[in-house]
Structures are given as C-alpha cells and as structure tokens.
Image (cartoon, rainbow, N blue to C red):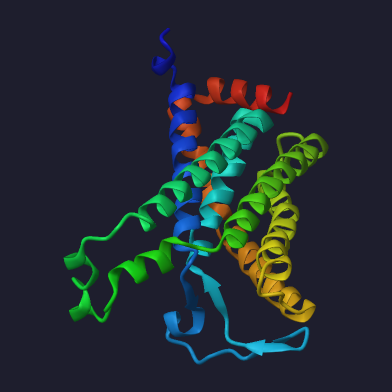
Length: 254
C-alpha cells in the first residue's frame, strides 16, 4: 500500500494541518484584545482579583486555543506522544517562519499611494497600521512560543500518565486533566516572559490576575468542548474502522 493510500496516514496529515493552521493563526490574530461582555451584549463585569479590577478582556487568539486542545488530545489518543511532539515542533517552526516573513514585509518600502489608500476607512497610515498589527513585540512572540512548547510537552506527559492509570476508559478525564495541567503552566509562562520580564514590567498582582482569568477561560472552553472530542472520536472510528482505530490507540498507549 502506498503511504497516502493508508487512511491512518491521511488522517494524521489532516489533523496535523488543522493543528498547525490553528496555532499559527492564533498567534497572528492574538494581537487583538476584545471585550467579552461587549461582544456578547452584556453589562461589563467588574471583576476584582488579586487587587486588580476591570472587565473581561482576552486576546482574539483564545478563540482558537480550545480547538488546538481538541487536536492535541485527538492526536495523543491515536498517534501518541511522538505524534504530538512532532506537530508541536512543526507548529513552532511555522510560527517562527511566519513572523520572520512578517518582519520582512514590514520593512519593505511601501508604495506611496498604498500608505493612504485606506484613509476613507479611518486608517490614515496603512504602513503604520500594518507594522502595528503584524509587528508584535519580540517579548510577546518568544513568550508565547516558549509557553506553547512547554505546555505541549507537559500535556503529552500528563495525558499518558492518566491513560496508564485509567486504561481506555474516561477519555474526557485524560483530555481535560492534561489540559488543566498544561494550560496552568502555559497561561502564566507567556505572561511572565512577555510582560513581567519584558519591557512593561507588570506588577505581580496584575500578572496573577490576568493569568488566572485566561486560565479559567481556557478550562471552561475545554470542558464545554468535551462533546466535540467524542464526536471527533466517533468520526475517526467510522473513517478508520473499529479494528484499525483500536490498533492505533494500542500503539499510541505503548
């Protein structure tokens, strides 16, 4: 059988592509901060946490991270830790690749007519807007990248430790449990590198407050998407067949 005629190989390519595109896209759209209450048409919720108050603001990238969690757990289930580590390093390389070309594009001399082409849309300097959106600070980029890699490696370890303890039962537990631990680390590492060590030097209270809010959001989203995890499993079993799916899961657990 040729490699691309194997359904398990095609499935891995599909899952890896979905994983990578969501990770890279989350990094690029993460520059936008949105107000959750305003988006949902609700009254602002003035939270008070660690002495910090404010409304619920998140990066747009948080919309995609729950999908990344589902992809991670699905690949973990059928292709094991080796599969997750492979796609994680691949996604990290693609993030660096993408930002490298974004910085190159920023420093290309803009066409004079293009700079003012969006004035009627309220953007007087298109070059400045382009640089602001795509030129995220290096501290933010590296903080996010390091946190992502650490989080993924921890996710793999916790997922398989829970799997060894529970066997093939309780898929929701190993998926949610691994996310709970990995994102506890990820949520704080990225902020610590980008905003505490970085030039903004956030106070500890702000660092803890924002990190906690981000972590709570990610966990609520992960729990809400548990049905999607089981739907993905059902579709995979239907695509591969029960016997082939069982073989992959056994290899992944070994």
